[in-house]
Image 1 (tube, rainbow, N blue to C red):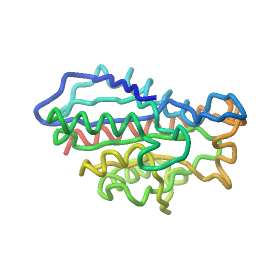
Image 2 (image 1 turned 60 degrees about the vertical axis):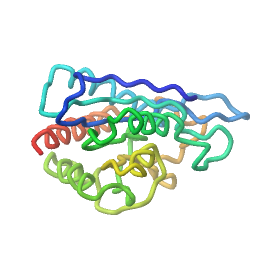
Image 3 (image 1 turned 135 degrees about the horizontal axis):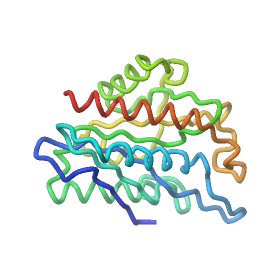
Image 4 (image 1 turned 180 degrees about the vertical axis):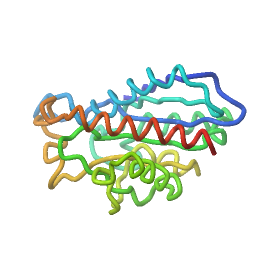
Length: 213
């Protein structure tokens, strides 16, 4: 659970990098065996499609997509038992000098539910979050990207702690949208193609906005 992979859509630019990310691992449980369709198959699928679409585009900034393993805790969630892949990548970027090149990090996690609502993640970088939410509003998705906020610990923390502008697009409404979270009920029938399309559309257009800055 310490592997990580990144697919650069072009070689690193001296002007900077826009980093997109998702984790692809599923919570390990001793009592059941399952592969999470929403957590984190949904965001992984979105990023694979974005990779296909972005490979042909060449903007001012390079665009990299990172697929993290080890976001889930091996035993009990803590700062040292979680986010293994993103912590490793952020540390590697800091060591090789690439970290200051990252102009923005956009993370997707749990983006496929049929009752999709994204609250603003309150610890994320405000201007970057506002850019994503204003892009969603412009595209007509204000009922999905809502105005309320909540705090979520996730892979973006690894970059926030190193002063990289970062935001997390995640629906972790366990009482309503994703009651199946971290259970064997997180199956493909819970996933909405429309939700995946909305998420991908907003990410794609947000990248275009960031390329203009």
